[in-house]
Image 1 (cartoon, one colour):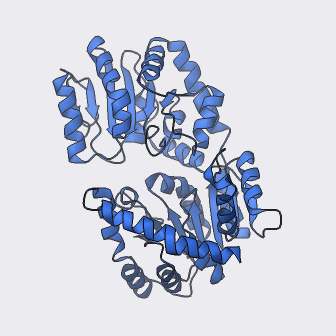
Image 2 (image 1 turned 120 degrees about the horizontal axis):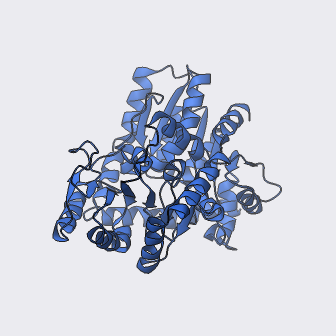
Image 3 (image 1 turned 120 degrees about the vertical axis):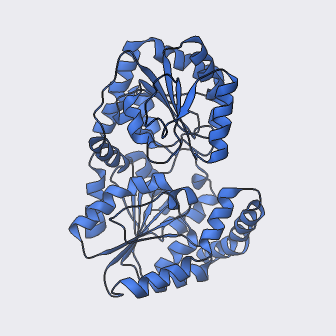
Length: 425
């Protein structure tokens, strides 16, 4: 009975509010507008792909990710699946335009925007794709998608799952909704034992959902990327701070502090990477630096070489992971807005990491803090204190970098465990 009540609440109240809000924001929010525009042709593109390219009776694995970061988390699993099942069809859906537009990977046969979560859209999509299994990364759960899979007998797997302490998913009434949502997923693989316990508490002991703690494949991916990149060679005379994936909210906290330090110390260098390197964002950063008298150039134009400039503004996608190898420390953005971004890329580079307070969805952040490889700051004053401390204390940087690498080393192997579970359960 309660299952149908929650379906009505979601489809008659929650979903219409989300859709109307998105359309209301579209005229003033470019990212929302791009996402809505991209979704208009999803079903038609999927139907054309299925009809034109592949045997409809072959095995098809559908991976769904929120954005680029979650795809990177999924990538070692997808690559492993491609190795052991080369004949399989692998498709990936994205929710975010920043993930969809910056994605290209030879192991994937097709990419598409996830359509709006209307029940008829999801039923039609599943009828066209006929997936052998649907695999969801981390947190981007859409109820009608999951319920449609359950109704059609299509197994669903959620990996790198987290239920953070105090999450609304644990609230008395809301948890009942999530009981029916998580209970409709065939397997849930968590990143830690604590998350395993919290998921089990939500689904209940009598649930048919298989809940296992298999770890976080993000660590495997970051090691893979690091091994394919340049070796870590740090010139002790060149002190480089990496500002990675900055949102405007991060900029408001860290920007002026960094500019002040650059003006005080001409030997400092900064690699400055906005989260979305769009033209107006790059121009705003460059104008701010020029007004402060800081010399700068775009990363691509200088091919990553500072020469006589103090700041290189990273003006494209795909550079950031490798640039951490050049830094002595990093600030990773998102922690003052939607949530902190990938902390493992600077961690595997062996440098200490600073980030904002909104990191409760990041198991990596918790571990970096526990190990001593990272520090969370709540505002401008704390950021200035931690930045100055790490710039001036070489031993603190060494210990922090070693601790950050230890986090990665202690968490390797999740991708293999998850892939084996997907194929065997």
